[in-house]
Image 1: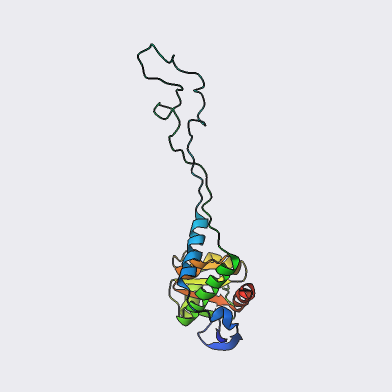
Image 2: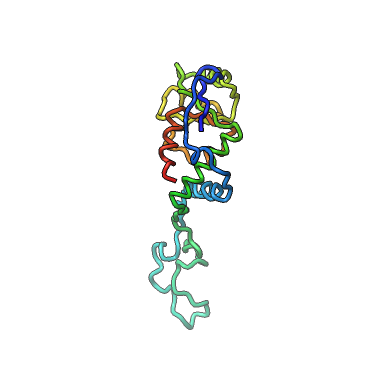
Length: 209
């Protein structure tokens, strides 16, 4: 499969890039994509909430009064859930929300997403994408020349300081390194701009599926 590569300054095709059909020509697999998205969203959850149970609260080691003869209800500790300062009945504890998904299944889901983006004309390949200065105005002009106004994700090979600063004030424009991309990022934006190096990276990483 040959894909058009566009210039980084105009919306003109300058060359073609040959890619594997098994990666960029996959059928749409909605159940697998849904599983990959759920895995990514679950992995973002911190799971760091915690409250103390009666075992974690300090004190309460002595029985507050004798078992019988006082007329009061039986009590074994002043740190029970019904006491002021006592522990919680069902206390929260740190937990791991991450979900397991086989590597091969995740690769197939990635390939299916990239293929669907190509079919919907939402993925555009650029020879390279840089800005001369860290100015938002320059980035807006560059995106407008490429036919994009908003809701676009720019995937670059490595960290670009000027590009990151230029896109920081644009709410619907994202810049991410190719190593950090997950399914939610690809689906969450209306359009995706990828450099040639980023496409080759994904092709090499997904070739084993």
